[in-house]
Length: 557
Image (cartoon, rainbow, N blue to C red):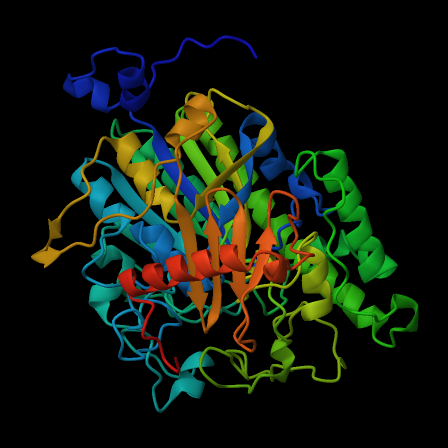
């Protein structure tokens, strides 16, 4: 790498023993952009073994660092709550979904005993922006929900305004309040507090979010203050809807079928040394179906092609964002974190009830939206509502088992890329096996901003931060991390120790399983019967964590 004449941010200057106290030094603090994909598979990106064209994210990885042990909360809204607050999701109020279960850890909206990254960084002088999917506010249903979803009636609010991003620390927000959208005409789209009741012809939300991010980055270049941007894409969450030109790039790619694509991804992961010295880390395929005997092969290949197209379009937008940062001289001193909110989804949404909750049954102009239970209509256009299902989810989460909402690695382990030319000083272009969690992003932002995490905020006592800064990993290659990480969502439980032991208890089983992630990265061998003392030790620690973090009692326990 060529040497650069850069001014290190305040945190790094302090680490080198250089005094940093004048007001002008504060202007050299890094910008921070957190980019969150939605239901992205662990191996979808090229830099994690995938065949999808992701040159821009691959570039960030080649110039930054990839994490292989970075964790989420297994589903969209809990992960977002944890990421935004630096707490476990239950402490932040969203242990399940955005509906109130009338228990402290399950209130369905961000707690006022938590602060967001934006609230903290704003007090430290940062400009704060959110673009995209919010999904951390309670969204009660209305009597005319179906007509509202179909853009036949309009209301001023989609949730309590006090829970909108612009009232939780963000200067601006363009995006959606709900969790699921029609990509061509999204429901719950807002500008700040104001509903956006009409979109232009040719609208596609992934492109619109990228365009907004580029516009804001160019505006920020005129301001000496650093900025924090939270860019939360809806892609590639179902429904499978993509632009025709993007789908065309993958029209033949997935005709090889589930097993061939999964094996090819695994071989690329092995070649890049994704899991270090572990040689045999591909979990057994969870389905015995043979592609050559699949009567729906045309539909299934198209479904995966649409998924790939959605990821491709997101990567294109991220490329435009990188270009804007480069053109304005901001790229080198901008920390970009890219990750997914959970593993790919196994849900079969074509079996859902049309017109309910956030699932439309008509377009704005009255065309029926088809939910192809019998795969009678190919996915892709606005008039279809479908998802990948478990077989492709098993592929996209290669090498792991399971998927979104599960406590196995396929649900809770996310690809995570960190890029920051001025600040990442170790392992550039490489892979780190350091453990991390989405709640660490708050602590990282607080450290880099020189901000103070508050004990009280707006008259409310604030729960102490759980996250630990990632900065030592960037600067030294190692940090003293978490003693353990805890997980619970809809009775799916897991607990991971700092030395790589993991217990898992699926909700339909009463028995805890035990895995050694150091030797068995994809959880192929349950060794609970061989180490009952380790299981007992970790279960006791899980129960203590659960009591402390408002996991217990949870509904149905």
